[in-house]
Length: 145
Figure (tube, rainbow, N blue to C red):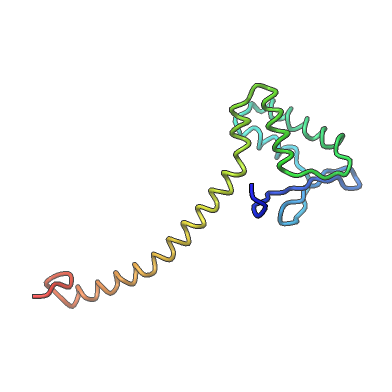
C-alpha cells in the first residue's frame, strides 16, 4: 500500500483504559469490539469464531502494547494470523485484500463520475443543437438537397 493511501487507525488507551481509535482524518472514537467482530464475520467466518478472534486481538492489544498505539494494518495482520491458525486460509486471503479493494473501488467510482460528467454536458449541448437543425429542416438530419 502506498504512503499516500495509508489507512491508519491508531488505537490507544485513555486514562480509563478505554481503547480509542484515531482514524486517518484524526477523528477519535471509542474502540468498538462489536465493530471488529462484525468486520471479521462479514468476511465469511462464523460469528462465534469472529467474536473469539476479535476478543483475542483486543486482549493482545491491552497486554502487549506498551505505548498504547497500534495501526490498523497491524490489527488486520492479527486477524489474518488468527484466521490462518484456525484453518481459514481462503478467508484470510480475502480479508487481507479487503481494504485495498475497497479503496480501489471508491477511486474507480470517483473517476467514472468525473469522466461521465465531462462527457454529459457537451453531449447534451450537441443533442440540443441537432434538435434545432432537425426542427428547421423537415427533410431530416441536416441533409442537403
